[in-house]
Length: 303
Image 1 (tube, rainbow, N blue to C red):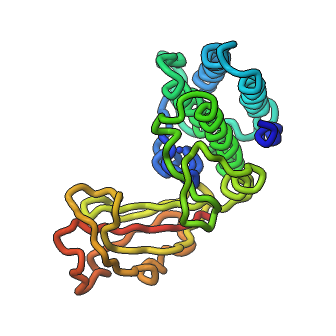
Image 2: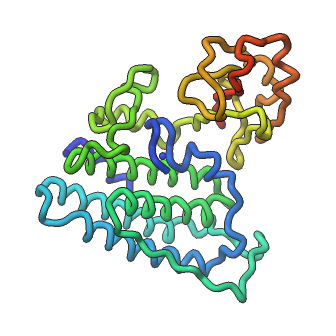
């Protein structure tokens, strides 16, 4: 238990791998359009609902039925979340989204309140941390994207540590407990999620404040062929492979024990914030995966 506490002094959606951050490394989340009706009233209402939801989450799922150490962890986790929201209001006024700049509607829109679902731990856990991420993305990210990244990494860390402790204390057969993560940032080996490595090195290496963002996009043949980085970040292509790997998206294809390296073909994307390309023009006479619905997998950093 003690090894987790230092992380809370700093005060990914189902997690598939630890280096797939729920918010910071989620292009669908970061690059999606914000709420047209977001304004100061919406921000204040959601902040209040998050505070209420945080209290309800910990009072519902941290009870005397659990060990003293687990309850102590809950106290630290709750304090970290509360402190994070307080810091957002106290120190980030210069980054608050400005309605007059964004063109957001100020009147005539009913504010839809958020209530924490308490059906079960997993549903509540995902919903609560998503609202923290949403608040940062809507209120901070448009004006101060890099500062928002730091805050979203913090929420990602908190969310991940929470599910680890839940798995250790309760039912470790849940799908969230049996997913995989690399034993080290450079390792291809995996282990059950419930067996957490020492966080001071491993979590810091992946979720650290200055860690470069790492993205992986699987682009199917019928999808728009483009990649994008968050605001104020530039693309740095790491690799691009055309083929069909096990467990990858794009329905209708079987495993193909061959692939075409297209890394050099995406050189024009280097240094761009957004980049579009035509896969077909680069494939040439490659037919090894014909009939298996091959697709492009691009791995890139956003610097």
